[in-house]
Image 1: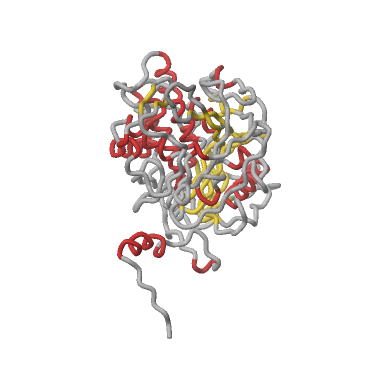
Image 2: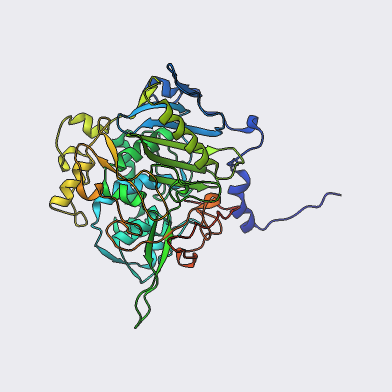
Length: 469
């Protein structure tokens, strides 16, 4: 006789999304979902076709065999040329890589030094098991602190607080969607600002690469995404000095991990992991004067840290193939740049938010607007060293508008806009100890701290609920 197990209505409702959702990984390739027969042609007609698109020339290396991602892309960050792609416009769940769009949209709106005291409603509406940096109600944090929480710990709590400062989640989602539309990231549909699994929330390898390229033109975006460790404020207790704890960047190619060495020349950008999206990652790296962007979405391989290893293989291939392949497409310019070719920076170019009560003014705002006005012809270069270790990072500098402050390599332990340094964690199965993007996540304050010379904690597997790095 077969035993039957009855579930309560509450338990069934809780488990239903996870029982019916397609698994992030499948043993049988035949069970893997198929890409649409025809996708968007933004960036070139070949990118609309399913399957791998590459045109090898004499002496070009073949693509790596160990690639299992549903979608990936390799692009030259300077010229915008797409060197190779696989289902580049397939609309897939982005997980926390969507935080790149969040940052690209909101970074110019608030000065780093602005402080905000967190209210209960600021933290409302976060998904169960969200990745957290450890923000507490009634505690005060600077905008700089909050962005460290977003970029390093992939903290959904930091995202929601910044969204509250931006007149709420609904307004922030609308702003992000408008930004995506201007960038011509037309595969992207924003439902939640943090990338947490939500019905209809999608992006593509092409769009995430486009967003990352635009974001890297902002010096703050560059510095936050390349910061390996930072100090984050703990709880302020009456009569005592406020303590801090370390957070470490969840980007394994930046910090390294067991079985995943730090990638030579890595300079960012963002990783993600949820039950529905699987592992996602966009990375930028420099080698021998060339800067490449690679996005990998949802590898089906059972290899540990597959998303990082497949990214590293594609970066290696891209550097070896540079100048030996015919591009199969391009990263397009924002609509506002195309409509105002050759215009200078400023609110009129449509790439920067209109000044408001929270927008910085004066020279700083103009510089940010100028940084954001680039398009397909904007070149990026890496300043300083090539090997990113736990306590050191490399930054990209816009060649058209060189920034002396961004060009200087930080000293070990130094963070953008601060002398403090530390370490963070990640979301989901790719997450570090005590962090996940939707299952079994703990706050950053509970994470173990590490000395600058200590190796990062090994990844902690997470099962069940969405994880959101």
